[in-house]
Image (cartoon, rainbow over the protein chains, first blue to last red):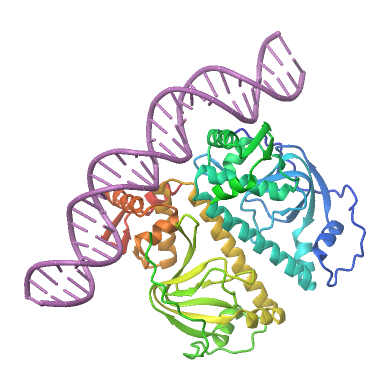
Length: 233
Length: 233
DNA sequence: CGACCATTTGATATGGATCAAGCGATGTGG
DNA sequence: CCACATCGCTTGATCCATATCAAATGGTCG
């Protein structure tokens, strides 16, 4: 049903590029100790478009932070459908699990650079540094909130789902009213629990009622945010 | 659309029944320090059927643990529909928020006794006791997992949703193959993102294919678990 | 240019919603 | 104790949003 290029990229073994940030190492109780520490502890890995970053049921030994490009997490259902759990953009952290194994797979939606951190190192650090622990907790809480929003989204109409999606992307992309989508229509459909045809039709319908403009399939301009917000429900 | 008896029960002010457990108080690093501590710190409150325990946007100053009866959390959507976030049975903890305000409301689905604990006391304790902190974290992680399951459920067919629901209830109720439902059909519908009619029809259809028996509307016997599991997807 | 893939558009089917009525419990007043 | 209203649930008829199947279009790369 869905073609997956599964260029399996193995778990990182070598340390590649040097970390960027160069602030004080000592974590203590700074504002966001995690961001810095993570860069000092991690390794930057490159993943080509559509390659797997980790697979469901693999050992969850690492935590990931998107440096560039984008990532999708997903599950394949027994009937062959794919449910996308989330899209992760530069700055976002993913792969945070609370079991020994990943509960979903992750792939690059575009060529991506990802900072990879050993989970054991991080949890050890969290044990010593309450700030890091708090941040990990906050991260989890945010993820929980995000998923709860998804539940609310999935009981809405197709139009509402697509409108919500566009607003979410605009918010996260923060490039004014223009959105540069990294993901395909199929990705969007699998994220929203719709078919690709319905997503496409909904976009054209939104365009014809002047709420958006679709100059190219990956580029969408929000023309009437309040209308989108209104139909968002 | 949905009749809600909103007998508003105010936030606990008085300490009522004494805690049951009588093990050592000192939390230190026991197996499950939370369960005990919570009983020592909390107050047991009674909520009549359909009364509100807390409302959306209220200050999230307390954490709750069901002692008897049952609880539903929910959100009212702008179109008037209600989405039930979860059902909580004796032993379950709810009201765990990571913001200052509750993001959903909670009501008793049947006359309920609920242990109420001041959140500030608990977080203070978590600061001192790593075991408690870990348990709070685990609780959040479990909630996250639960919600992720819901997302997967909501993209399935009505039959699959109802089958999953029955299996979940059987698991949590652990009374063999018989389920004593505390909640109404409307509650189930709002939990599964279906209408009451569809839930009802699906149950009769499951009954007619011998997967279940419905001796009375609140009592359901699982006759063929593997069939349910199979259609669960 | 031609092959291929992603996307759009069109025609039809269908699962679940909606509207409407019937049915069985439970409770109330006479 | 019975007539009757009420409430929660089931059943029936119809409608509609979205899925499904199918084809056309457009963009990209060799």
